Image 1: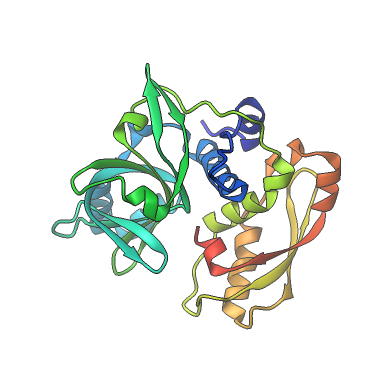
Image 2: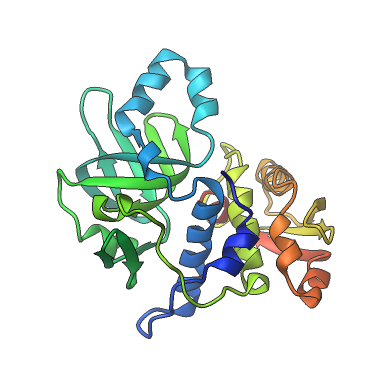
Length: 276
């Protein structure tokens, strides 16, 4: 069952900010965790074996594109731990036509404390720090925004969990209430990324400024280009991604002054923002 994010924000709390971690990093991580609860929930029992993605793609490409375009939970074993200029990533279940590449969300929970069937987050780490904790052959679970198909199979913006956490009976208890008004920009980017279609002309460094109008109930009323990136296809794709949000019910849980601020506002979007 999909629960509104605002319910989770006010019935659960965000992770405590550790002195060693920057609050911005924690905000990004918390936003991504709440997005998980809002979409797939803590339903690791329904995790899809990553090898099944390949089978589905070979069986019916159109159906696979539709099936895997939404948030999902997967599991598989590490074949390689690699790095590029964006940071560490995993190659999972590498074999004859079965490998998938897992690109992670910017910050991951580590270490975990698991006791009595309950899991607790005790810290967060960057991609490289997090990947350094694992070895080839280990099983992992992934909650990802979507799967992309191209020269390979790519799981995008994934939260990664060890089996001990994935098999815990309930989601981690979160402490400290999140200020939805302070995190609303990140939520908009996260939901926009879900509906974004990458265009061939995209390149690093592009920035488009959009003027967005929203109703008090969270409905996206208007999206216009305030300042172009210089690339019309990317600009149009960013506009379409924000429009695809439709409605953010979470807005109804915000303070009146925050709602007023988001009736008409501007935001910057880069390809990285939309491919989280």
